[in-house]
Length: 304
Image (cartoon, rainbow, N blue to C red; front, side, top):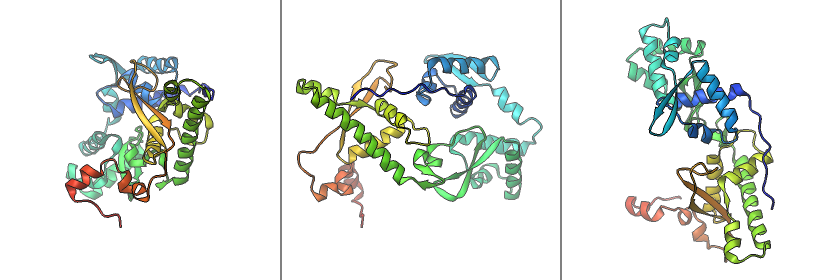
């Protein structure tokens, strides 16, 4: 099967700049270019560089040097100017919400940390929301509760459920479609390797595909209405591993290789079992990778 080519995506420069600012808020100590690249792998280096240079020229970022290289950090003066004219109670609540990061914080916890009356907290929260300094986000962990975070932050996956949730509902059909398409791509790689008529070792090696290759294939299909990351695709690939349809191996990779993390790259390939597994093996406990260690320690868990 020929390699899938992704059409170059022309993103709005304003969207790129906004996302870089969000990353800086998520990592207040600073971010490297590698962090930006991992978050936006589909963006060309020139696009990222232009966005960073514009933010630096506008005075929204500070450029620092560290052992890891260049760091980009949000200017502290920006946060201070946002709260200009606010009283001490409002500044306190804002600081508590800022410290919570993109995971947010419940109003109950704000009350506990600030020692302010609930009526006063609700008044401050409404005021900060009207100024677009904070926002309320519904959490998949508790449908009737909202968490508060800074207005320009992208909520953490633990809050929104990531790409697998829509309006707090789990998109099981969407996950199943992704599962099938990822497996179909790996099967095509395996078939192409077998048809190459090369020696078995070369066939086996050429049947592997990186998570980045699978991610490119899914993006090219255009079956997702939301932007999927390589982490999302690896989650789907992990379900295929648990189903016994795919195996994974990890290899060393050069620094800067596309799809590599910390000098390592995950490779996947479709596999066909020689015989069908027994019913016991197909049960959750039969597939659980930690059942022997965990259940031996806690005495097992009943699924009935």
